[in-house]
Figure 1: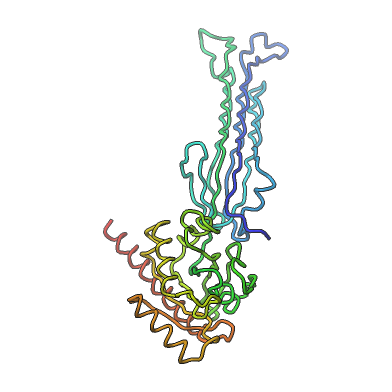
Figure 2: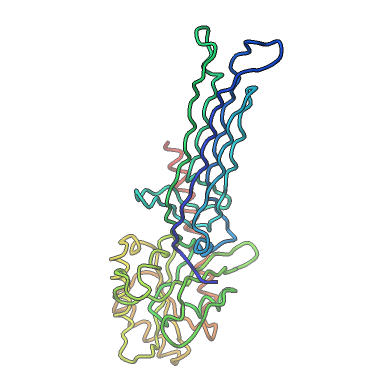
Amino acid sequence: MKFVDEASIHVAAGNGGNGSASFRREKYVPFGGPDGGDGGRGGSVFLQGDSGLNTLVDFRHKRKYRAQNGQGGSGRNMTGRGGEDITIRVPLGTIIKDEETGDVLGEVTEQAQRILVARGGKGGLGNVHFKSSTNRAPRQTVPAEKGEQRQLELELKVLADVGLLGFPNAGKSTLISAVSAARPKVADYPFTTLYPNLGVVRIDVERSFVIADIPGLIEGAAEGTGLGIQFLKHLQRTRLLLHLVDLAPLALDVDPVAQVRQLEQEMEKFDPSLMQMPRWLVFTKADLLTPQEASEKAEAAVSALGWQAQWKLISSVARSGTDALMQEVSDALQEMVEDERQAAALAESHE
């Protein structure tokens, strides 16, 4: 299925039903008085999170959604039936914006989470509300309200614990296919990955995490070059970044150190907060060099970069170092979650 992470849709809530201007008409009741009922409320439009979806592709085919109008009131004080709400399912990680104002209406991050995006109009009041001792035959009613209408911009940022980033052919797709059941396209030419792939890495029965393979980035990505800004945003929701570096690039004049710094510049341009996220260097394709050459080349790059955080040397094809890497990633994620819990508990106690 083609990955789609942006869509524009039009939503319209139902109009309220009109109130009734009716009078009681029965035998032997010559002056029955007003009995016009109220109109029903129009249906509203909701967006609801669904963990079974991972793309906005459905909105390429259907772009307009309208809830049901409320029915008008009638005699004998009968209120009109309310219009049915409609619920639109969206993948977790969807940001909802009003295209006209640019306001963010909400973010869907949990299963079954519902966000109201267009409220149905209230039903009008019937003439029964206007009777009094001096106005025994009122004919006035209150008109119904129109339902809200909005043009929405939907933007999906994939929800993953770990994000893989790097230049094209750094080995991201090979790594995610080696450690999870995901099967992205793998080939020896650039941009084989055209959309994010999600995989679940299972450490044991009780521990697992989601890893995202982000399409390769190149110089100018923050300005939209290549796949550019279209997928840089997906890194913002991850807890840990694995920065993959090709130790044996196809072009002999490619410098791994220069590539790391170049990608850091693109991250800084797009969103400076990305540089503050936990990030490990992972040197890939160690199987294409002798163990000594691979180790020396990785250590030289770490030294030249002045790298202080974690770094690893792996071969996804040979499955060398991948299991240990995933184990350490899982441990780090558990520590992050525990730190977040403690921070939340401390903040709550202060409140």
